[in-house]
Image: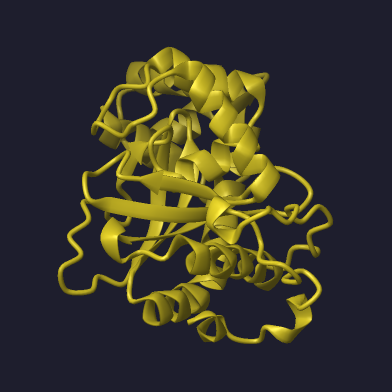
Length: 273
């Protein structure tokens, strides 16, 4: 069935509008099957029917735009991820939110002794990962409620499973600009993450992960935040207007004292290490 749907969609590679007969001729599929597939694709907005002719719908454009955006973000992020992975000697992730889960767009660095189950294209629950919390912190209430309704299942003894505590943590992420995973998803693994964003919703989140006993959260936090903003700029986005407020302590997830004033003087991520 999937092969047939793909053949029908591929028939629109060229002409803007096709009739049922033209799609049948291009796909060599039975007329009844083509008609059923076309009408279903209209129902899900992949195609639009105008009279007795069909054309590609806005949903196809939306999905294509998402792919282009994600490719642009990944391309912009890759050099900074390599720098961060080398400087921190840890694994660096780039991820996006998809419903109640995160999807890893890229994973760079795998030092000896760092065995993480993540992989490029893989998924993980958003509620117990640093990148997930960095993205959910700026999501609307409905998106957060869907995550809570899906269940905050304990994956380790450290997973936050109480909805009230979970929401309070998201508020702290918004205030500080950094999210943390302290053995909440995988026992023995810690992560610090920051959203890749400007004034609006994040387009992705960046994280550094590794054995929690070796992670210096106070040092990693500003480095990850700085890298996330450099990715946002490199992707062609306007400079962020609402940078995170300075926290009392860098270890609490905020910028160190004077960090924002020195923004323009930090040309390399390796300066943090």
